Length: 383
Image 1: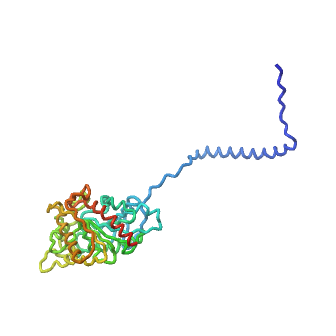
Image 2: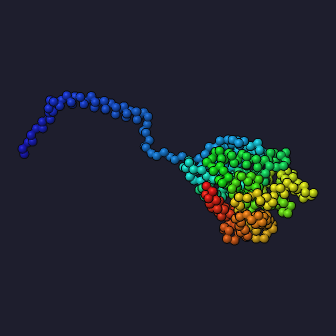
Image 3: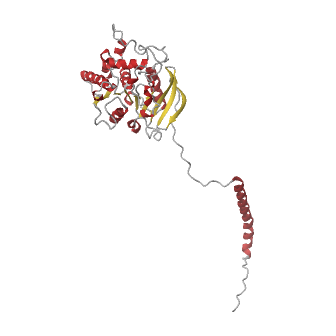
């Protein structure tokens, strides 16, 4: 077999030699840099693979103290459903306020929202998650604020401020402190057309009472199974108030909290809020003056909604008595020729699967299913 010709080394033209010599030092520099980088990696450890940052859970907005309110604990909850705890000289103790924000609140910094102040019933507390009713949570067009009203604060400044309960100026707390605090810290429609008040049971009384005493503050008011009548003609409501003051009436409990029957706080006099409840020699005039039915004329230009059942005729259930008080409020509005929205769902048949027409959570949840879209429409029409 013929042998292959020898392989001769490739010789570069002389003209290329200087360029070869020029590149070699640079090549040595690159190699040195690679070695140095490798050493640094060995010393410092292998850097983690690039990945997207773990998303941080959204948190409640930071609210500034003011208007006599001092926050005494960190906010708890989510960015759209959270509770703050405040102290105020107006009411003894610490008080929780639940705030529900629309889902787009953080992502729409130029947007303002109307506010619904929702007042709870006797023996309840805004820390109770049951007060965040689904219809309120689902609202994407308004803010809901649920302030503490005390176990038996009755949404008024008590006549007697020297009881074992301490300072009890609930109206001052809500009207002079909570409302401006919310308007300052959140993007609200801080005007009458952007503000509503409603409540259930004791809070139903509170809603009517506040709207009647502050006619320029709320454009809409709703009472759900409200204690709407305090006159001597409706002694059962007076008895319910007195029962909460004297701790006689856990039977009048209207809380969504199973621990409701634990009591209403330190026992105080039956005269603590409005003076004597007994109709002797017209000594009960303060009760009559605070009676929502007698003051329906003060709701001129305010949208009114009233909801009640009848407990299927069972006089042992508070709703049986609520029905007559609510009907009296309706009749007063009829006499005045004022418009209103009135629902009497009787024994609860057809009014939500969890409503039996009693003084109960399932009926109030369905009341709000009906009311919230109406309120949102009223806010939209006024904007």
